[in-house]
Image (tube, rainbow over all chains, first blue to last red; front, top):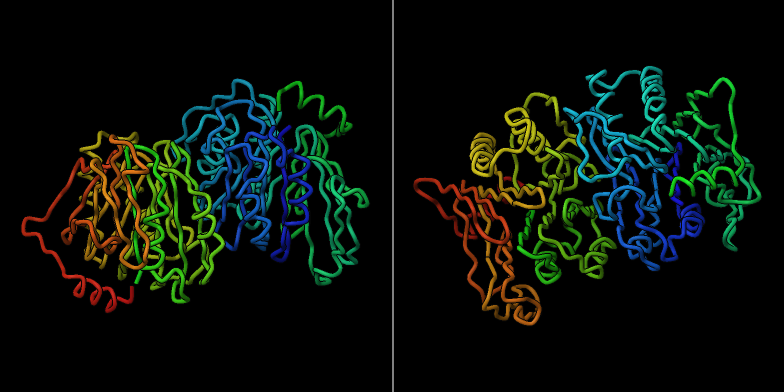
Length: 278
Length: 278
């Protein structure tokens, strides 16, 4: 299935440890992936690495590991194609500029018959449901707000748009402008916030451990978001179905939980994803 | 000085040979560069590698060499900062979407006091004169043409806008949407079109030669654009000051030459660039 990974921190942080587990989980190292992408914000700039070819040894993934880029906001995605051919222009995360900042978006899901009207400000380049959803969100935000509104108003608008779009199907997504990170859960998505006192974490799918206390300061705060927990000795929090959360500086600043929150088991979430072909 | 490199072809072509010479010329391998970037179109998608840190051994440049990406349209830039801090968001080429396609832009020059009004559709993220010029060109095109016009109308509009913007200073640029490539010369810029019968080329700054006949088919046509000629045994054509040329499929489809074209010597062009600090 498609896999999402996000990181939002209060200090530039290296994502290599989480990326190792994520790439194993998502099948990045086997031949079943239809593309992979990772975008790093560095201040207002973005470094975006996309690989549209299934590859056991992606040179781009190698670069990510060797480069050890430090970033406050990272979004990564491993794709299993459902709509759109596997081409570079259909590879997540997608990038656009709004209100003088870059925005990145990655989606895990499948939106059926989602055909919003053509935007004035934003248009898809490829032919995925995901890029259409991203452009539609930006288009609606830009039409409502000529300038970036305050965070509460922005959160409310993203919540409303997410609610509309998820009526078309599975809509797990991560959206960031380099200072804040929206996370919307449709089926399966987890997060952890690491902060002092830091401990040692063990990857689920690999015999790798890291002692975060050795690579952090007491003021660091790092939120990691993933389709499935990446470590087995830490407590990952599950997002409820249809929950929207906004992270900033590694902590939750807004959240909208449904009145009667539903939490799927991993088996249920994975079965739904399989049935939807994602 | 800043250096521009462009390639426009009728078949996906590997730019590694030209990139070797370009990177030597632009000081990519010494410590005087303030950043480097290269963007490859692959069909409608873009692969963009940016390096904002001066580095004798850029891991991104290494990746470009090892990856041997084949592309029909490539834009590369080595930067010597004149305006704006050296940060990722100020690194060329810049990327935006217009009319459902990605556009890349790189600039060699210096525009003094160029402060166009804030755009409705496009805004700079960084603080360079170059990104302002790029956003202004897209903004004006998008305001005039809600959909992509025919090539002649588009060329006339880009010619008009280039003429306006160059009144602010040096404005050598390359602009592409993955199928066509605009090249505007303010001071120094050269091109060569390689096609059958192909011969052997020798890099100016390195003891490297390539026999293009061995790596091409008789139908291939490759236009290479560079601030200074990259090979010494081929005839490079110089663009006139204030000339605009549009390449498509490796050939010139439109050009606008001033009534009394002026061609600077390399010494004159380099002296002007030095005086302008670029």
